[in-house]
Amino acid sequence: MPSDESAPSRVRASDELRQVALEQFSTVGFAASSLQQIADRAGYSKSSVLYHFASKEALLEAAIDPAIDRLEALLGDFVAGGRSSAARAVFIERFVDFLLGNRLAVHTFVNQGQSLRGLPVIERATTAIRGLAGSVSNGDATTAEQMRFGVALAGATYMLVAGAMFLDDDQKQNDDDLRAGLVSVLSELLLTADGRTTR
View 1 (tube, rainbow, N blue to C red):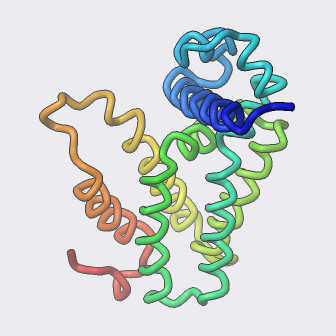
View 2 (cartoon, rainbow, N blue to C red):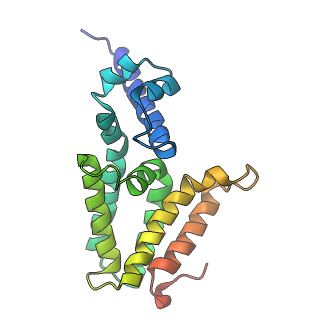
């Protein structure tokens, strides 16, 4: 019978492996990442990774599933709250907080979603993003409005992960600055002119 002391160790290993996997998937890509690379970076053996996750796909699912849960909840709240300009402004603030808190997972399923089609967790993420796009843009959105949403989402995820790699250390901003900038830019892209905040 396992002792109580072994459970936290297993949970910690699982959490560490998920975090390292997210870092690998978001920087070098899912296809270019191997379980051995993830194990090496996390300081575990490949057999330890396989003890916790049956495959690289299972590790991907465990790594990004919590972010998809949060995105679905955020979408549900937005739809329930109506689509007025005021509701959209509140949604944008909450969405930016979601992006900041889940940047690696969102970067992975937004920017690699097309190449990972067919994986159930990616299909779930794609469904959530389509639901979000439909709710933000409404059913009768013009091509330009749909493009604004796409540019807003992809651009935000790019800047939070890949874009930061191109900045010098003295140019990197803290999350408060990033949050203010993202709220401003996403408001310009996703709110009608009369609903935009003037920050």
